[in-house]
Image (cartoon, rainbow, N blue to C red; front, side, top):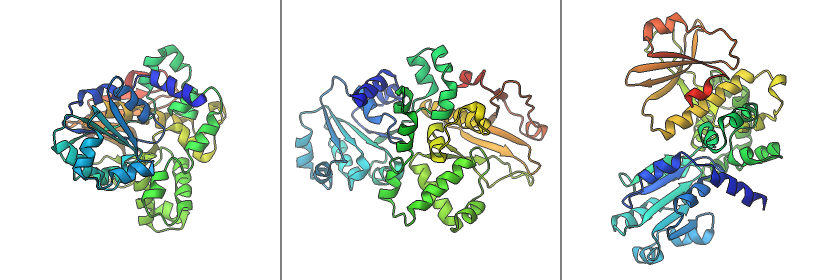
Length: 382
């Protein structure tokens, strides 16, 4: 009953990705929806296919995997003959799914095909080559600030800012009135990166947990792969590979340093952020209120940058995102670069913090805009 209520509430929150996918609805290409587990992909798909005759196949079911693995065209065409839409959930679990879908698309049967998966690990590997030029790709993230404001009111949503900084924006967490910590503890366990464990031969799963904990404690700071390798007692390439896997499982994302090859600029150390504050806090087991925390600035920075990433993704931003720092420790928190124009952001939770953009950056790069983000104005940019 509780799960049904949560699904109902989530279905009432209009997702920005809905319109983007509907714009690609043409029966000529497959629609591929990926993203973290439990962010509402299935709920979104059910909204998309409402009032259509849809065959919904979940590849978590062994029988479905058997049916669709290397299936012949006669079987497939008969399977979907009476439907307008074919949905294959957790499509990465089916061998040669890309070849199977290519066969259907090339037959021009007039069926809309939707593939979804909770990881880009194998979903991408299994469909990219067979479906080159035959797919539209979309990423779905946890609930965004904009989506929640549209569902509630701005006043209601803004009043929950501290809650979002601590517990994040996963649909089940946002809609829950109690047990948020328990929900996040379950989400941040192996379930969150189950695809990493299942689809990649990880020899040291405990190392993955230790790495996540180390990254969570360095939130918003430059990350040294060499230092992490020493802390974890493994070689540098193992750290690099595990971080890459966590990115593909949509747990973390990187900001690379921006540089024009100036000798005094940082060029190699990325910053690593979590797609969701709640997941980060669950990993380190820290749900204290902001008044009792030392990491408020890092939490707010992670919140703003992850929300900004959602916005840019949904609005098809084709530029690049970075941070900037030089060897004298002058820094710009976040940059967006589009057509050689730079927008620079400094992110401080308190509106009382005095912020000056370093001349060593502004005089050299002449940014189009310099923007100070704080808790009183962040929403203007989301």
